[in-house]
Image (cartoon, rainbow, N blue to C red; front, side):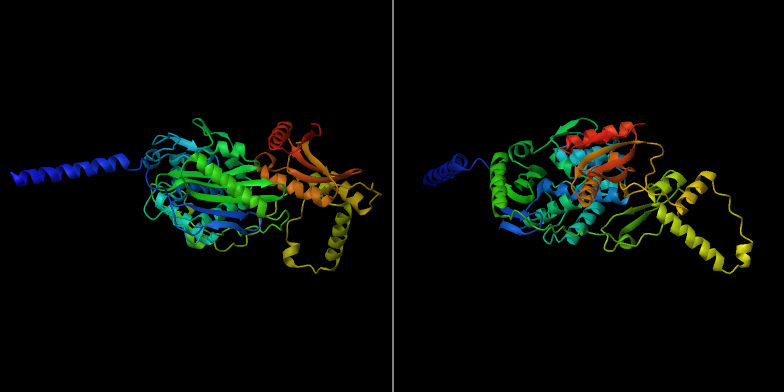
Length: 482
């Protein structure tokens, strides 16, 4: 009887202890470790750090690397923005956040990029990696090689999306380094990270960090991340005047708490950064085609036409000198317009002198007699040999147009010096490559300064380019007539 009573008392005590644990146990899990890094984006100087080299779960900050490699692949011609990507069962089965893609569905790469950058879609990120490298494992290998080339010493990637996986780790310092490369290596794509909404092909998606972007002056990116193991992470960037700051935070307890802390970090960065600094751009990682090119020749991966596909799967360590392109005949009128007449006269005189002193050879005597030049070209060369006085106003042509009869253009401002105008033209061309591709950059001296123009556009092309530039805050108006 006594033993039974003792056993009952012991059982009751155990039950009481369990009840106490349930009542007083915390409702939330153990918070993720905190880490932070604040960097002057212009120079890479560290302005603040805390646990910045502690390896933690990066969550969807991973997608910065996924997108970086995608931009790299597009730039190198490995894949195109309008390439149709077939969604695999692995990509379609990724957990949220996701775009909702189905296995076998085809979608353009540009829509996958928008979904990964704006919505942080995991299915889109996996599809990007598979489209570029053939498999998630091969893409992770390329991610790690690229990270090593950037100096991300404490980062190991296992997937393209950032969902928790054993060994998939990074640091606040490394993610800040990656964010800086995204900004400076691909400025033409960086605006993707500040879009509040984006057309992702199957639907419109909304930005995961709209609240912070709307609330912080100058905020324009870059990437949020959340998993239970990681907490609420964010790599953010903002520009005010000539200053640009990058801040990375790991381990926030909520979206609101993360945004408050990142705001404090950004304010700290702007208060500590000098108002003026010489921009020291990070060195972009290269790629070794000889080491990383894979020739896909199996029946499953061979294109329909039977040709082989070369897929670059790694980073380039050495840039090879390109082979000179064969010269193509350009319209005579266009070349004469782009070259000073004095240059033509000198070249003509040198050609005559060379022909007079050069010994004849059997090969030359047997060569085919060239066709006579068009009379219009001969007239222009004759005029070049006897130049007439020209007006003082000249146009500086930086590219030979191949517009083929497109006589519209756009003006992006008037500047005090020719250097300023040329610099603006180059910057605008890099930021708006899609609508200005093939146009002619022209600096025109005027009484009030130097006009920066893009010429050789159709009327529709000039209108589209102007509207896109105005949407980004760049002044622009159309010039010319058809």
